Image (cartoon, helix red, strand yellow):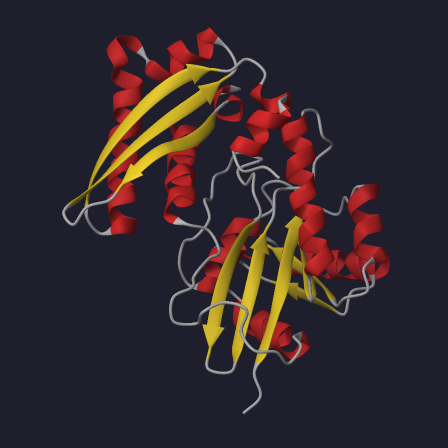
Amino acid sequence: MSHKSGFVAIVGKPNAGKSTLMNALLGQTLTMVNPKAQTTRHRIKGILNGDDYQVIFSDTPGVIEPVYKLHEKMMGAVNEAFSDADVILYITETADLNLDDLTKSKLLSSDVPLFVVMNKVDISDQEQIDKAMAHWQEVLKPESIFPVSALRSFYLDVLLKHILEKLPESPPYFDKDESLSDRDTRFFVEEIIRERILAFYQKEIPYSVEVKVMSYKESDDIDRIYVTLFVTRESQKMILIGKGGAAIKKLGTESRKKIEEIVNKKVFLELTVKVEDNWRDDEKQLKRFGYE
């Protein structure tokens, strides 16, 4: 029996539904979903295995115009996903017909199959859907256009069938018995805490914070995790901590509960806040935080 394996890049604007789509295709939550833009900072690979296939989905940061070196690194992750893709999914909200020149150029210059995935059709009418399909056929001339609802898993089975048709015959790239992602537990601990920061704090705070696991000590009955939250200003540190430490206590408690769900054991979690005024433009710090 032949076996197919390949890489599928999921690209699009911030908050178009890329993470929701990948989670739905995988059948479980792997990447954070939040209504705020720029939720995804790293390229995260999610691995879907079948008897005769392995699909490696890449959830990428939303395409933005870089302001900091951090943003340049994020866009580097997008470029990397383009370079090794066997299939590209451009995801857009059905109501959004705008496309920036940079993304358009990347999509049109790629020589791999392109599918346009029009998300959130569950809140669109037929006229809007027909208009969007005609628009994207003219602008991008993709191989196929799929009107879907990632949130409600509508039409995703058809999308996956077409993806599999385009993948090359190849043995699996990752161990099919163990792999759900190429990322380790430390990474997902950091993502869980960052997702809670996005949920609990407002304005610039979530975008000024980087989360780093400094120490992860495993034992049979409890994992002890020590995490530093890096911010750019003293005032942000005070907001993160909150009056009498109430805010960071809530952040720690809610993050710990989610971490315990993924490691299936008790967790001791200690959060520390440190000011690094220029981390978003510091090459050395960005590399330390995993932005290559």
